[in-house]
Image 1: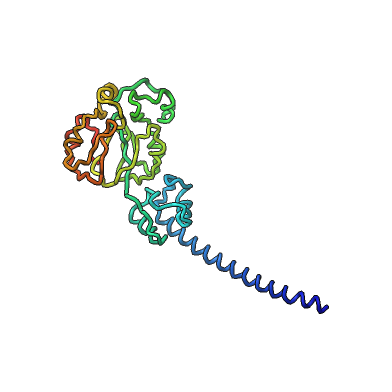
Image 2: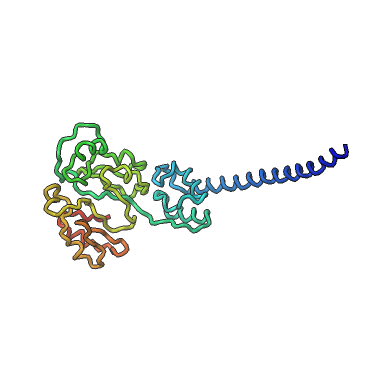
Amino acid sequence: MEIIKAMLLPASIMFGIALVFGILLVILSQVFSIEKDIKTEEIEKLLAGSNCGGCGKAGCSAFAGALIKGEANISECNSTPKANKEKIALLLGNGGNIGEDTVAVVHCNGGNFAKEKYEYQGYGDCKSAEIIAGGIKVCPTGCIGLNSCNKICPNYAIDVNMEGFAQVKKELCTSCGACIINCPKSLISRIPRNAPIYIACSNNCKGKDVREMCTHGCIACGLCERVCPEKAITLVNNLPVVDYSKCKGCFLCVEKCPTKVIKKH
């Protein structure tokens, strides 16, 4: 009996210590879990709330969780306003890179001015038309104009205009990236929201070849590069490339462009 008592005493002590530590772990895990959940909710409220998936996560809640875990950066969400990103960075306590405030633009000016290969009679969707000989247009990078971008945009910020090519409504665009991902011609990209101009053409062919495809395509004349007083435009692979850190918005390039592919933004 004495032996049993001698064995039970240290066992009881060990059990008591384990029980105390176990209770402490449960309490601490719940405290930190509540704190984490509260912070996640605060961050989610500051996010755009569009659940567009442009960040690569399954909605804003998942993105907020990824931010907490350090598995994402706030700059990956283009839909959230800059002011809210700054608040999220403060909540995260890491002063993360909030990124630049951007907006989507369509790099095509063709539409009804671009020649067509055939009359499309199928399902009214750009992706469907792209399957047949690379789309309706002779231009390999021409906007097909069947509104795939409009159908996917959560804010209806993009639509095909009367001239037959897609155009972004700057004031409605949150830069979520849904249209960028879904355009079969990869004609849409982001530029700084305060950018004065953008290039409305994506055809890298030589001027003569472009003329045969579209009367509103860039002919790579280089006039924009020569007249820019800030040297903000460079002709690369037969297309103008804008350095937005240099562009002052004088619009000389817009005035001089013979095919009007440089647009005011």
